[in-house]
Length: 301
Ligand SMILES: C[S@@+](CC[C@H](N)C(=O)[O-])C[C@H]1O[C@@H](n2cnc3c(N)ncnc32)[C@H](O)[C@@H]1O
Image (tube, rainbow, N blue to C red):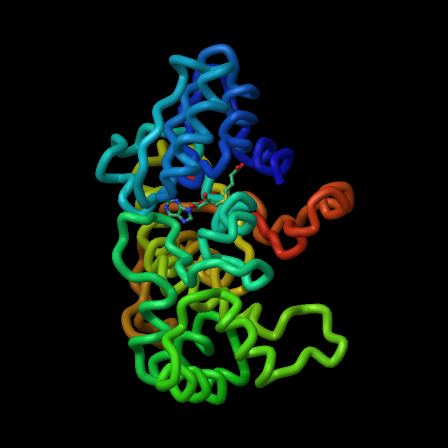
């Protein structure tokens, strides 16, 4: 969604931008290009391999105009100055290089270690969760982060199965789920949701996004824009709720909004487009993985 991101963030030569999810540096390169000759980019990614790839790619054309740091975007306000950026991009989820390298353990389509860590310095792998957690905890992970309707059945079967042999590989887990829920001609692999849920849990993606949204608001200048690309409904709902709360001119305590108990306040953000922006047909043809992408854009007031 590079074109849509550029339209949203409106890069300018005097602008300062943050890419919190550098990946291979594709969006970062477009931002630097569109803000030539003097626009600045601060980028980060949790993945050391992505950081090296982005460094090589960006140094070739934009040396001296960017800095790169390995880390979680949830913490970007700790190392970037407050109220000083014109645009922040978060392009969530996994990158193609992460999915395509079997050793990273993200994919049920290739056999590899059941790992799924975006940052290898972090301790807990998907195998640790699958081999250690009780059935209820696993079922909650599959349900909460994967919307998996068979979460309890799958979790119980995993606990039974691991008593014979610990889970070590992606194929072991994918095969078990496929035995429990044969495909019957369906397109999606039956382990899709379980793998998504484990990845979200291993990388604390929901907690990171919550803190990352707050951090983005802290580092944006008034008039600066936040663009977030999500890939599943849980993330998109979080961004939508965050936007809804931050664009309101009142707050309320508790879970229920009682109009008489509202307290007035000045909103921090406004929606640039209230509806999610979806990839165009051209992009979908070129990159089928973009089919579930949604872009939301907010502006700091
Ligand atoms: C979809 S890819 C980004 C692709 C990138 N926009 C490009 O053009 O190449 C997502 C990237 O975000 C990184 N990532 C995900 N969550 C992160 C987080 N909380 N902090 C930092 N990086 C994160 C992943 O490691 C991955 O490299």
